[in-house]
Length: 50
Image 1: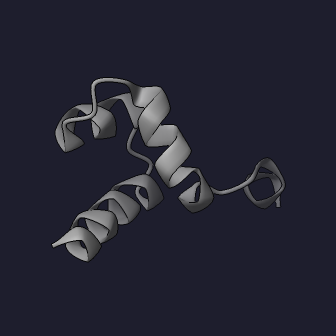
Image 2: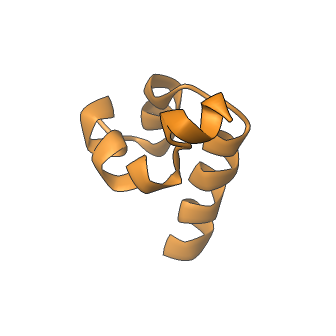
């Protein structure tokens, strides 16, 4: 179940969903927590620039 939840979050982030919305959908009280958990899934600024 955890892997499915992580996959769901990954797909949403890849599609450009906001961290704030994702945190709400995942039931996280603080979007900063979501950022700490899923930051590695966000493209870096150099990747976006390229």
